[in-house]
Length: 218
Ligand SMILES: [Zn+2]
Figure 1 (cartoon, protein in one colour):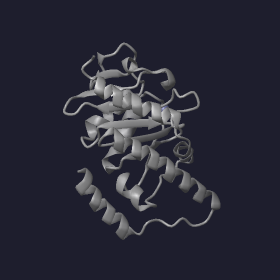
Figure 2 (cartoon, rainbow, N blue to C red):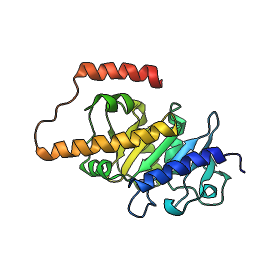
Figure 3 (tube, rainbow, N blue to C red):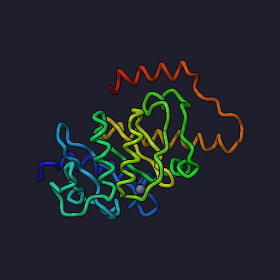
Figure 4 (cartoon, protein in one colour):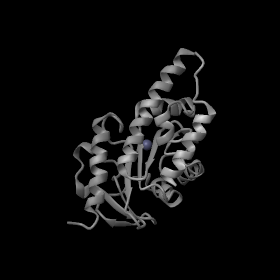
């Protein structure tokens, strides 16, 4: 047994659930999932270009913050720099999920941030799901674009013309945020198609939930 097998298990189990539920593309090889080892600059992350349906524990890569392999024999995800960039800049985050989930991806091509619409979403994800500007997958520019948006303390982002980025204090919360994001993205998209005015949460409610998030997440 390798020393990071428990961390790898979290990444593998979450990846399988996301793949089975359509978050990672038709052939289930899109997206990437990682978890940070508590108190260490070490991350377990999915490998590059392998179907989640045939992935085993030994396929999950373990890397350090310089993207050097600590355990595992496969090449880590090409988005490893993006994941490590999140961990370096958000000490509150210990799990990162990048998906190609359909409704969030739809909004990513409309370039339309999701405003505060529901109580639970605003508490768990934050006051807005902002857009990370487009850059090539795996590029240093995309890492910089993601880091540039992390200061809003929210837990989900849309990557323009690409997909979703969901964060959490642990893997359970990151998974919940990915599911909540898909739910609110679907509802927001349906509302947009009506052409009617969309009612946002009142500012007092947004302030109330922002205060609640400070005690919960900071
Ligand atoms: Zn992607």
